[in-house]
Image 1 (cartoon, rainbow, N blue to C red):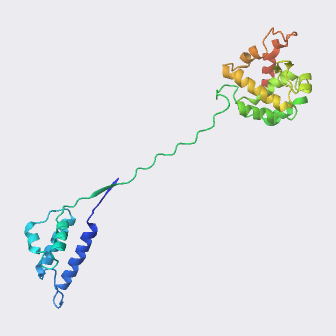
Image 2: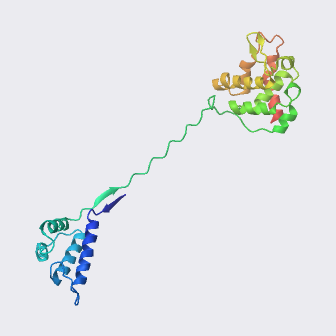
Image 3: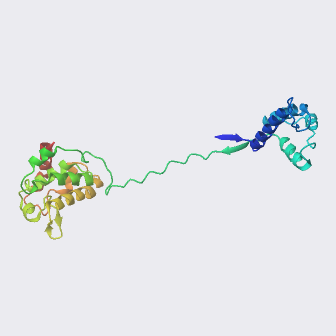
Amino acid sequence: MTIPISSNWFYYTTMASLAQASSTANQPGNSATSLNASGNNTSIFMTLLSSMMQGGEMDPSMLAALNPQTNLGNSQSSQMMEQLNNTYKPISVSLPASMAPAVAETVAQPAVPNLKTDLSFKPIQFLKLENTLGGKLSGTSAHFINAGKKYDLDPILLSAIAIHETGNGTSRAANEKNNIAGMMGKNGLRSYDSVEESIFDMARNLRQNYLNQGKTTVAAIGAKYAPVGAGNDPTGLNNHWVTGVNRQLNKLT
């Protein structure tokens, strides 16, 4: 957007005031002297001033009629008439463009890729889960929910695996090692300081080593998590892993 502004606006305003004062001085009974000692010059001056403010050129005959050197002195009057004789030239003032919107702050990226599947995090019936969990798993509903939020996993999936792996919190691994997911270490079953720590470690493992690797169903997870015929499964319990986990999922949903 541009706004034309006359660089001689203040000058024209001043000259208009002088012209008005001159007109008053030329009225009958006023002893003051006109600008050029001529009542006719005032109307000529006003005509010229109006022309200048509208961007017109000065008529040379009118300029001569003013006879500017009579009262104002050569240097001063010449300067005034020189400015009046200039064509109106507006100055284009460009208003500053609106600033571009500030870049939004970068949203913190999740610790794991945001891969949405049927096993991604979703709200659950807290009381139903709380009333289902038993033994070493009692009172851990909030941990399953918080781990699910952190790693974008369905808390029901985590709970179903833990219930199946521990016989709903009654296994020896759960009671002696706080291991509720059958997680293995270098020396066999891992030990945890708390059930909460075991729940979060299970969630991390499932997200990083299963869902992020494209294993997005219980069957696909079970094929790696509890492979049939594994050397550490002499009694063949892995044969029932997928079925058992799906059964617990159905009970909790």
